[in-house]
Image (cartoon, rainbow, N blue to C red; front, side, top):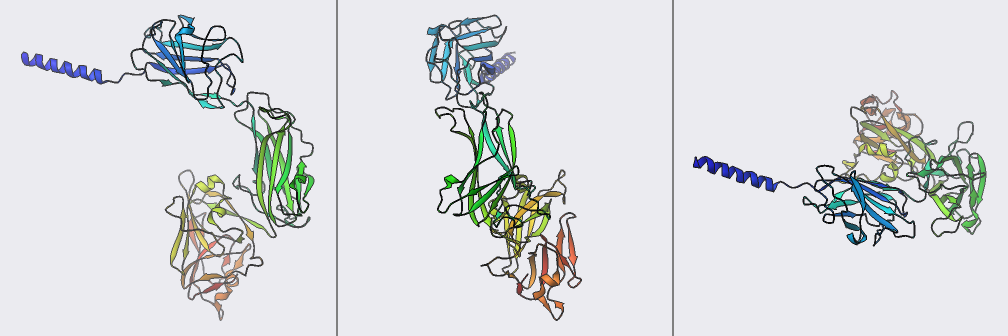
Amino acid sequence: MKKIISILIALGLVLSLTVMATPASADVTKADVVLNDYCEYNMATYNITFNVTGDLVIGTTTVTITFPVDTAVPAVFNSSTNYIEVGNAAGMAIVPTTWVTVAGQSVTFYSPVHVVALVDPVVWVFFNEVLGPPAAGIVNPVAGKYKLYVSTSAPVDVTPVASSEYTIVPKYSTYEFIKDFGPTYPGIAPDFIPPFKAGLVGQVGYGSLCTTTGTWMNVFNLTLQNVAPPGCLAPCVNATVWFQLTKAVPGSHVTLAINGTWSTLSLPDPLPLSNSIAYIPGINVTLGTTFYELWEVMLSFDLVGDYELCVYAQCPYEIECAPPGTTIIAENCMEITAHQWKDPFGLNLSRKWNLISLPLVPFDSDVDAMLASLHPAVAADIISIWNYDSCSDTWYVKGQTNSFETLTDIEDGKAYWIRSVYNLTHAAGAPLGTWWIWGNAEPMPPDAPSAYAVCEGWNMVGFRSMVNRDDDDYLWNFWVMGAPLYGLMYSWDATTQGWVTGMPGTPVVMTPTTGYFIPFSVNGNIYP
């Protein structure tokens, strides 16, 4: 019997220790916040509700509300200007001024009502204002997402508990310009600025792509729109929109068309650029909270070089201390390079493996510059790019991790494996996206004609041509006495994910953007 009693005592001791070791839950749960004014820098009433697990005793239990940094909290609360009211469904009472202590962002006060947690645990705390500004009330912080913290001195756990998130909205609506070259180059990265072609008015391809009939195609769409969330004050009315050159080749002329209406920005030599302003004809827009305005924009340059074109939207309302009519509410600048010659080519990529080559000489062969035109969704799905140099017997690779960064350039005359993501949603061989490339169909002076070295054995060979050509025409330097000095030619069908073979002399039709594996019996150069 004594043994049983000893076991029971020991078991009770263990159980009591177990209970003592269990951590207590916080005394506050389900904290929520409602404001009567969510505008930044405005004075607001804060209605806070939360549940308690311990009783609030009048004049004994304290409640602490800690507001976010940058929220302006008054040093004193009183019934004549602002006050704190506490209670629940059983009744409300105002906290006496002497019961309130403010320390930085924290306001601590004794409860003026008795709350029994087991009967009704929901507590309401109202920070009210009697007088508006400049009376000392709670002033909202800058626009953003916030949480405040609540705790009580009830004998459970005084750890502050975060409230639900609430959003302070901007005072003024925010607007932005968005450029879209997609109408001319479908699938291009939204922020990419393609090269332009400089030349006299009337030249084919001047400033933009042309159709076979010579009809202009718009270079890009320009949208002015509001940025969510909209501001809490009235939107801008009668905004003015204009373009200005902020960088240009001295003596150049830039022709600008907005929705088909042309104007010329003539730049004297020497500058100033202040003479290069063009207002959008007939544009005097009202920018509402759901505002969306789109223009078709075309550009032409008569001199080769680097330019910067900016577009501005100005609103006549006053922001802070700025005088009316001087507030720029949106701006977007683009740096543009105009070339003497320019050819674009859209290379279509597929899921899984692609064996490609450049059909032209790129303006910038740097691998990152080349890939910059890819839409972000397409770029994210490219796993790696590979090139094999037979002359040095070396593989060069670029991957999505820093461990693969030996490939620095993507050049004409070479072939590249491009590996992309494929899965149950995106099957192997399915379209991935378009890769836009800019350059010249042939090397332009002062560059020398192309010479692409190959070595005995297998070579990854690029096909630098904008049109189809037979293998004996493109690889003419490797034909002796009517016989090729290379063997069976392999290309890759990215749609079927399979090899395509061609026997020299058949002939083999070589096509733009296709890469080839070709075995050569001698060292030499390809002269396309």
